[in-house]
Image (cartoon, rainbow, N blue to C red; front, side, top):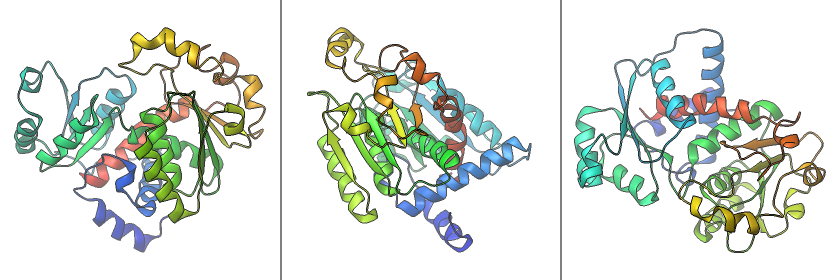
Length: 319
């Protein structure tokens, strides 16, 4: 829990910052944002009006389609008193050859913050470099930090703590894994992932996470065997085998991942009170069995809801 004195100092540190990846934030800053998200959720459930972003505008640039990201950011900005503008690539000149840097500079003259949901991580980095307003990574091929914040908010609500818990990720070494891994390292959680050969997480992401883990006393294990990864896990996580942009590899990936389904047999090796998480959308019967995703340990819809509250905390803090 963030103390009142620390909270004031951290709030000042966060103002005006970009939110591109958890690697850029201290454990104290991440925990502050999680506590803030839980408080904003309490206010919203109690019907309390809280509008720190009244009169402010958020530009939402989407190069990838979305359900949870678009709705949660748009509704969240409204609840905070501001307005959100949805901008697909086809709606703005960036889709017709205007540089990202030029777009960033123009948008900075109109808006108070921007989000970008994109393919290449370099795009969101370039947008932030060119902008004079805060930029939020709403998903890139390298990381999905807003999702990880919602995931760890959910874990904190259900478990009452984070430090010392074990997170097991089974599946593709993708952007979700990278952000979960870094978040676990920063929060003092143990993290284990299992992926088939050729689908491991990015080496740089692993190296950075292990460096962060040394500071907090957590452990990062990258293994091949799903049972080894899930042994004693408090949180079991998976994602689709073919993320957006890799659909043409679906059949090939189904063969590679056939032994990586999170099902009733596998979760027997997790703790009895484990939480099952998935960033959604899910392919039921593929990366996860229906018995697990619809079972008593599943918190996937709490997790989805918390995208709203976690992102509200991020926007309110940096904007």
